[in-house]
Length: 258
Image 1 (cartoon, rainbow, N blue to C red):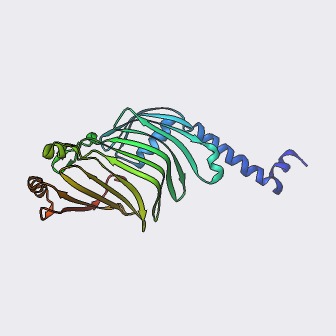
Image 2 (image 1 turned 180 degrees about the horizontal axis):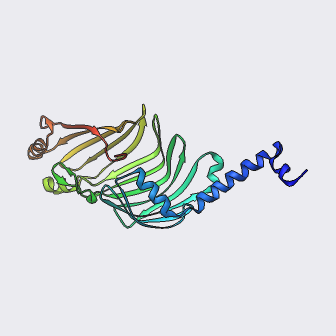
Image 3 (image 1 turned 90 degrees about the vertical axis):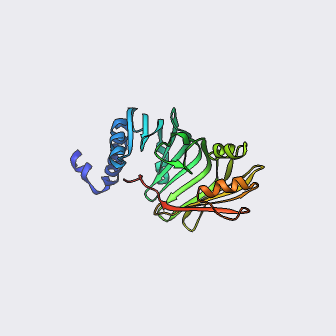
C-alpha cells in the first residue's frame, strides 16, 4: 500500500479529524490580537480599541472604550485545556480606566459564565447620563463566585454589589454618606439586584431587575427621618407620604448590539 493510500484509508480518518482540529486551533491561537480586535469592533460598533499586542492566545488591548467610556487596558489569556470540557476559558483583567477587574470567563455555545470575579467601576466616567439630575459620582463594586448568563436567563452564586453612588446627594441633604450594598440573584430567568442602606436621616432600598430581552425595572423606596428630606425626594419624582416614599422607572438597556 502506498503512503497516499494509507493516508486516505477509512481507518485513518480519525487522525485526519484530529490533525485538522489541531491545525485550526493552532491557527486561531497564533492569530494576532489585532485581528481579534477587528472582529470585536465589527460586532460591537460602540467598542473602541486604541491598539493591541500579542496574540489571541495571550493578548493585550489598550485604551479600550465602550460608548465613549474609557474602560482601560484589558489583558486576556486563553486556557486551552478548558476546551476538553466543552468551553473556552479566558483569564481577564482590566486596569487604567473606569473598570478595574480580574476574573475568569467561560464561553460555551449557549452561555457565558464569570467565575471568581472582582470588578470596580468608576461611575464618574458616565457623562452622557445623569442620576436624579446630578452627574454620576462614586463607584460600584461587584464580587461574584459565579455569574452565568444564558439564553433563558442567568444563575448567580455568592454574588454581591456595593455602591456609594448616593453619597453626594445624601451629604447635600443630611451631611452623611449613604452606602448601598446587597446581593445579586437570579429568579425566573431575571437578574435581580437588591441593595439597601441607611444612615441617621433615612432608610432606603433599591431593587433592579433585568429580563433576558434586556428590559429593566428599577424601584426605590425611602423612609426619610426629616420632612425636608422628604420634600427634596418629592422634587425628584418620589411619591407617597413623608413616612414612606417610592420611585420607579422602566426601560430597555441599549447599546449592546447597536
